[in-house]
Image 1 (cartoon, helix red, strand yellow):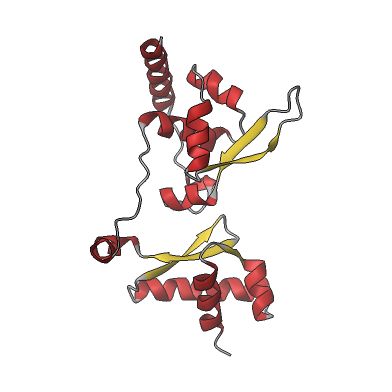
Image 2 (cartoon, rainbow, N blue to C red):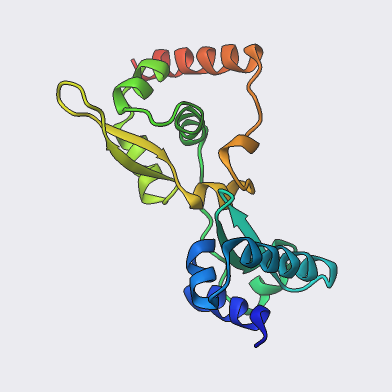
Length: 185
């Protein structure tokens, strides 16, 4: 049996990330052996400069996706992929969620200094943020965190790959939030 062909068929058909355990189960192989097959296939796609790539997400899920270098050619054939517009406010809020997760709207608003309902809802709508559960506190506020779509969109395999923020960057974010508050008042 050609395991690589089976892996390709699974990832292509699913269209979203698939856990290694599920792929291993389908192949009737140990997870370690399945992981090695996935890494070999990923390397082969890169070495052969193929139109597809295999991404490992969060270290336990794999997804087949288009080689991003080929987007200019795809646009000539298909309608341009819908590009989300991430304003400074959306990016600021997304960065707060990414670095502080799980985080409540109240915590986001405390950092930003302004109501963040609309911004968080837009990030959920874009699929970059999701509800992770509820905080065990009065009112049981919703906890938010980033999604796999966030990882794919920003080209990182896990949250550990996010760059560390310098104290200067934190201060700059604080100043921008204060300026935003003054403008909205």
